[in-house]
Image (tube, rainbow, N blue to C red; front, side, top):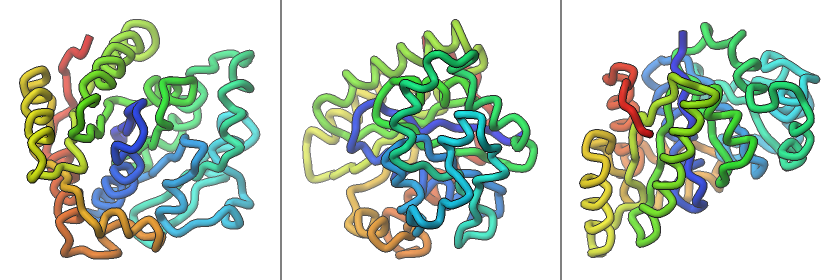
Length: 261
């Protein structure tokens, strides 16, 4: 059974989609069968892999959540042999409202992933920057959460809300849910606040911070405009080295058993 990760942080601009794309691509480069699921209505996971709206004529994750399509209907192959994509479009915005009256509304994504889970080693879900029903579907479906955390002043405040939400989901919907790790992103060693935030995160979550730290990197910020993950854009960049390191770290880990409540 493949492991399912949610890349989640309700705060925007922390490198969430960058992490989802490049972690998935790095796992695929290690010949691990990987599915990237985009449940962010912005659809940036798809555009970051070179897709446009015209490529989604078979349907998107919105159609899957609404029960009109299966994942097999909408999954696309990418430029990496072992990486597939379930895309999203702005239509997904309406799902937050349309799912409300449906039975098992928080379990729709889990029901969609169950039939394909055995085909993949890893499933990576790119969540929207909120704690709404789409993110709740992701948390209900996954085994663990990876939290990208930008090293800035308000980082810990947002993290505390997410950790509380994970605890509530564990109690009510998904007892196996764990915090797999906190990933420090956009780290600029020249700025003192970056070191302060990193130290605070290590203090409060001593066993839950990845060794890998993603630096602030120009090449990482450029590659989405070229529709490529960083390893197909600049494999020698510091950003690429960081995400390959993160993938190795995840592959080395046993499934986490840590309590986050």
